[in-house]
Length: 298
Image (cartoon, rainbow, N blue to C red; front, side):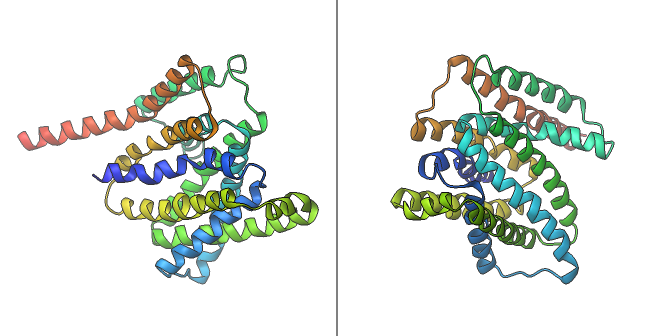
């Protein structure tokens, strides 16, 4: 049951790309990032007030800068420049980059099964993102690469902080601090290029409002509340199975809201990438259950 619940926040996160292109296509990424992060962080603070110690502000500011300010900006650049399905499917390559990062930085060699499916995922991605078969914005592709790097580094910092700070405090204050950074950056950008922001405010309509409510309330506030709540009741491995809903949401909402269509060959590559991203967890879970059954029989 918990795995089914884990699919809910993952699905909301996967709708970011299509909802942004459909309802907020001309809004600047810095403004969208600020509007997504800061209100959601303040909602989480109101739900459960928690405040950091003086010694924790520095690392939380660093985390908010990477995990929220940079990452949210890059996500919205992707949302405005790449097909929704491509953004959703492309982000499942995060484990491959995490594996390489820990291998290089921490000298932690990946397991054989992880290395095999990671290599297979890269090969499939190479064919899916082949310029001869699909036209993709290079700025969007660079934003995707940078966003993946932000996730890997930010997750490493978050894991280290988790040993002495509560998850809720980390989540709340990285959203608030990252949102403040984005608000300041958006203000500077508005001073330099005011026409983009004036146009967004002047032409504000119901579609814009509904898009913002979806991104702030469902995509971020509810999504992250469920994320934290579920991680206290299930293992990280089990939670990752719910992540399959993220790229699926990107594909479905891209078709429904934007009319995105791909060839059967491209859909087959997407499905293969989804399967490759899940196989190490599936095999690991099967092996663990098999070992437990053998231990009980012994």
